[in-house]
Image (cartoon, rainbow, N blue to C red):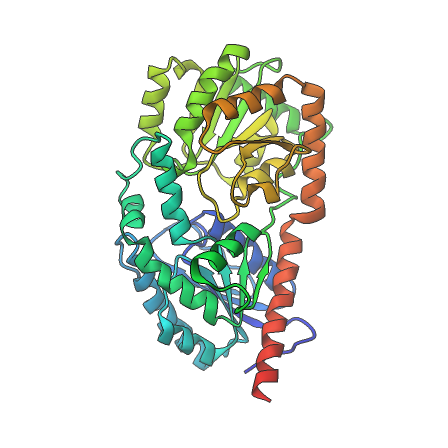
Length: 426
């Protein structure tokens, strides 16, 4: 059954291994997209993984179904695929879907399973990144001296099995009615790895950020000044000294050793600078140990996890954000920082230059701590220019990278997929 094509009232199946309270870039984007669709009068059924307590919020027009999955690194994507497809077919019999939105690569469907999806409704496949890209990012991190690269079971599984699991993302990307990459870099990655150029229907839609949550510091807004002062006091940094922020999972691929090496050089010029890292993961003790050996313990703080509201306050309290990751499908941290009016220094490879340039921050050579340090010192040495770059970043987000814009694009893509299916069937 295909619903109306000229207005709302679609029934969308959202198949995502991440959904609140299981956060991450994918979980965040599905969270916002589903709410936008519901507010536009559509209905969304989200089929995600079970086992994470916390968020039982009931939202009109959104149903969340949590299915079993095997807690085995990488294989969970096959297990989750089996149970998600079983539930998809069950719901469809009672309440037919108009479109199915698959979020790759964390669901691994084989050819027959993709065909079963397409027999239900048009399929849109979001490409959040690739397993081979994740693997190459880990290899690059190891080459650059990041410690404990393959001690994490999930990272080790990616290294050993990425090639095997990449065939499933190729099936979905090539067989979907429409594939949607979250950056030009991700689209090119799929084209080059899988020979898909010219033979598939793929659009690029950058995921946006919540520009109503991530807002610049404004001392005229009640609570902003108090929050900023309190946070900077907590981390021991005065208004005259820089607070440098890094946000992301505590994993080798995120480049935290490169960051610490750079920060050691930065402190030679900015002796009172402090570094705040916000992220979950198994590397916290290792990062703290490294900082201790480098004499940086008093200048580093790590927050393992913060709700989005508190994270937005941390951005507003910071002077500069750094993003040294070795691989991203897109990367939302630079956009969160820009939306918050905070300049960003980020790696010069992959999708990052599609968002970041010298007008909103600076780029540095991936993995090169001296290049990172040089970029940060240059930014901090011109405070007036830094403020202007923060304003430019906020403006760029509002022009190109809001959630509302990306969600509207997806509504249009759903309708295109539905119209194409009708044309094919006529």
